[in-house]
Length: 101
Image (spheres, rainbow, N blue to C red):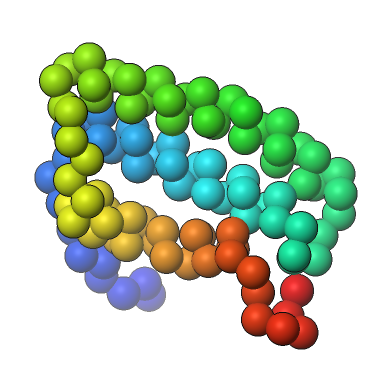
């Protein structure tokens, strides 16, 4: 049985889109990370998909801006990222400790 996660903070639809697109891009960057073991084809496919995800993230941010949401509320968005396992997902982008790949 999975542990109960804290609820997501209240987000606008546009903020939710930004969080979702950001995490998708982070996941792809983790798959591309050359410091981690993996196949070049897998990294190539992730890099190709990253172009599309970056455009989707740009569009989500543009929508926020067009709607008058001119600020990113870091504390709230960080809580949402933590609930959605963002720390683990983002860690795959960083360099692994020596000897781990």
